[in-house]
Length: 143
Image (tube, rainbow, N blue to C red; front, side, top):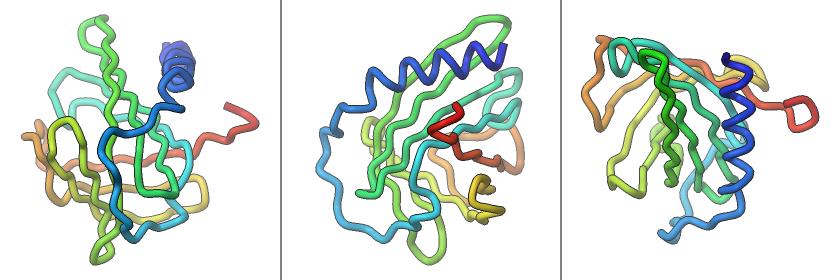
């Protein structure tokens, strides 16, 4: 099931990949280790009973495109978000253009293909007391 969802995400991602963000990004500090195409997921942390999977393209200009897939009670939904990301005081900031809200995370690069994020400030209420996840870099030659 996860391979089907990931394949669907990658196909959907291709259709929005070339679209430009409507908001002009400002020049902010970025960590080049975080640039690229990444995938991740979590279950029951944001919303009890919901599994959330994503593919995120963090660009060198500080913009991102994020495709979420949620699975709850055999129902699958997708949502696409665009925004801006930057590093400030050693923390990862993620501004979502549609909501105007910024999420803040501490992060640790575990190796060139894995980054662990831990929530510091979220724009939404979480089901779990702590929210953390690991993003895995998607190898462009072996998706």
